[in-house]
Image (cartoon, rainbow, N blue to C red):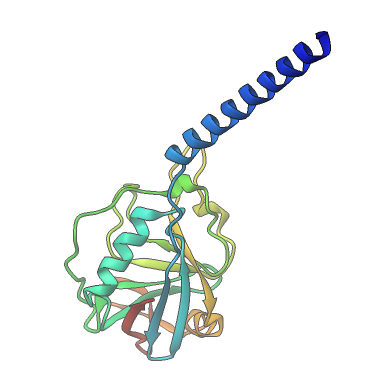
Length: 199
């Protein structure tokens, strides 16, 4: 009889533990973020294609903003207007006449995702105001630790990486540059973004 009571007690304990685990799993399932696919973006330029994997899971606002500009055709006909060797290549904001395009409202800075500005990552260009990024982006051509977020300052929000076309990035980086009006580091031979396609 004693053994039967012990067996029933052990069964009740196991049942209780199982019920608690199931409740925890259900609670986690309700609060867990829904997996977001990371889309591919292809930047077609006059010197070749650059394929990006976008970090929608880490930088959702920034990626949505980039995709919106891409799908609207905003980037078509813009240029890489700022190229600094061993630093980065920047584009997406000026047309072929070096006229700055009108943009939507700025977005929040997502550099708190702590994704590093490593070589061949893409990040948002901005002013000294951390929340001022609009359409312009840059591709890091080296590990730019100075652009990462710290306790003292906001960083530059990385939202993807180059997965194909690194040779095109290198080619743009090694372009000869000149000064155009008030702008320095402008490629002497225009590098035009013909279109940006999201897949």
